Image (cartoon, rainbow, N blue to C red; front, side):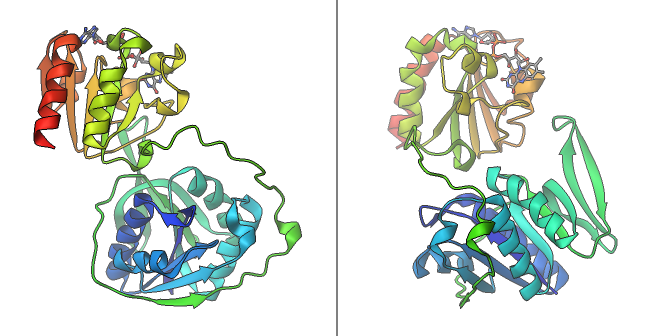
Length: 321
Ligand SMILES: Cc1cc2nc3c(=O)[nH]c(=O)nc-3n(C[C@H](O)[C@H](O)[C@H](O)COP(=O)(O)OP(=O)(O)OC[C@H]3O[C@@H](n4cnc5c(N)ncnc54)[C@H](O)[C@@H]3O)c2cc1C
């Protein structure tokens, strides 16, 4: 029995979500007194692979194969299922990002396993195996018992603390038995829209709502984000009105994020918005309405006009940096 964590690189680099996944896997492996094995598919150099050990992997399976350069659900899930068989893994972990959400159900089908997506926290019990996930836009917690022998679950992003150690791990070559015909789709072209920090990876997020009053007023928000090394986000009406790109929209119908620090600038704090940010460690809200619901969830609140407050925040951020 072991735990297999599927780690996905982007251009040969692992993101924070993978380190979170491994930190979680490490704690779970310690709880079950078993081994944590990281699986990488694609071309990643040895230095990057050793990063996986620093976050808890006991062993790294390295599936170097050019064909794994871009995601194909069928071929990847087949390879992950084979790695699970090879390592006798009974628990297969993935991040609850787009990749994990695509691969976990396909892998569960291959292994005839039990699947839960968006798990938060370590299992409540391991016999029976019970995990938790947030439901009803974060307003309730569901406890789900996985009865199947193989348990596949995705870890909610930014829900577990990242822990580092000075470990090194053995890297073992892994050659999955996949044919060219298993690669049923091929990404032929990727046009990156931005080189900015990814919203789901960011430690700090600066987010604007309708109170920003229009796209022409966004520069100071971008300036604040740049000084803080933050990603930018927005409320749904802002992306609906095309003030900001759709991928910045957070909330029930957008991205769910949980950064260490979230700035809500001119955002009222509707439940659908809060559903996407309630996992943030610290929320700072700026709003000219002292009754705005965002102040109910904010750790720090500034009642004031953004026209005055935002330049002051920028100066304060510059001074700190
Ligand atoms: C099914 C459904 C799903 C939804 N999903 C989402 C979702 O995923 N994400 C999401 O965000 N919304 C979602 N919504 C919409 C949500 O209900 C709210 O309408 C939306 O979040 C409001 O956006 P806002 O806070 O930017 O705008 P508003 O509600 O208009 O709030 C603007 C705020 O700015 C403040 N303000 C105005 N001027 C200034 C100023 N000069 N200085 C400082 N503050 C100022 C105002 O006091 C106000 O609180 C959803 C709605 C539905 C029905």
